[in-house]
Amino acid sequence: MFGIDITVLGLAGLVALAAAALAYGVLYPQIETEKKAEGRLRRVSASETDRTKIKAARDRVNEMSKRRKSVQDSLKELEKKQQEKSANTAPSMKKRLLQAGLSISLAQFYLFSALFGLFAFLVVLLAGAGLLIAAGVALIGAAGLPRWIVGSMVKRRCRKFLDEFPNSLDVMVRSIKSGLPLNDALRLIASDGQEPVRTEFRRVVESQQVGLNVPEACARMIHSIPLPEVNFFAIVIAIQAQAGGNLSEALGNLSKVLRERRKMKAKVSALSMEAKASACIIGALPFIVATLVYLTSPDYMMVLFTDPRGHIIMGASAVWMSIGIWVMRNMINFDI
Image 1 (cartoon, rainbow, N blue to C red):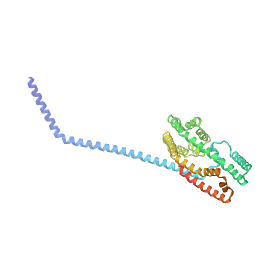
Image 2 (cartoon, rainbow, N blue to C red; image 1 turned 30 degrees about the horizontal axis):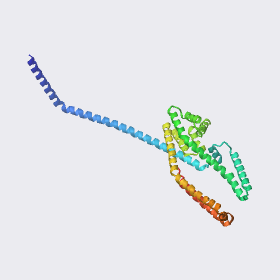
Image 3 (tube, helix red, strand yellow; image 1 turned 90 degrees about the vertical axis):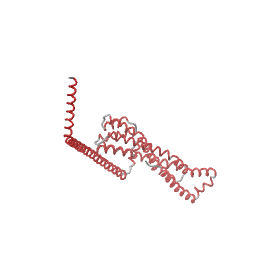
Image 4 (cartoon, helix red, strand yellow; image 1 turned 180 degrees about the horizontal axis):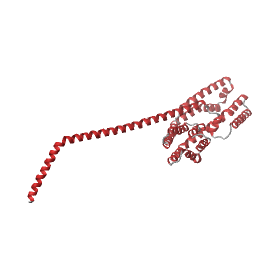
């Protein structure tokens, strides 16, 4: 009975297998056709999806290109405006006093300059020099020396501002990333920053209080700090206000750029220090030699001061020395 059951089951299995093979042979073309149709449908769907993705990517690229072009146009327009302002408006003495951080008025500055020139005139006149020489010294003391002092103070204040400005930008970046708006970040620098950055940002905040918006208030900073880095900052704020974008990232990139510019300036200064020392030695050498010759042979040198031909020689020498010093100065100074 057990053997019969196995035989029957085997025959049934063979019959089922034969029937399945026959059905597969009959239905194989239809199965293949359906499989190919399904494959074609899948490829068409994938191609449509890829086409949609490509179109979306193309649209994003076009949008980014339009936005980049808009930013570049805004940047060119702002730079053109800044160049027109700098070309048309030369810094007045009142603006120079503001840039130097002096609290005196323009009338006080001119009064001090006149008193200083009068003092120099009296000192030189009492020392026994001629009236013409005393007048020349008085002119230098009244018009030249005070302006030179103010110019030196402006440069020193700009260097201090440039040393602290990247740190203030980093504070602004962290403030904006933490959720503070730009106005609060500016007030934070105006209250807790280092001088002279704190004073300049306080002026920006005060300008907003009288009705100016943030880009206009930042653009006015160039009047008190005549630096290209301040112009960069104003342009970044103006572009962000016009085109939008990630302000914290833009300010962070600006901070990195300012630090790299400072490193480059320090490197150029170190590399040109030898040339500067050589220029100083060459410029001072004629005066040193003339002083030594005067100390050893006074009569030999006094001819230049007593004879009219000596005056001509000294005048021509001063002109040529001035040209040489100007050429050497332009050769060792680099703008970055």
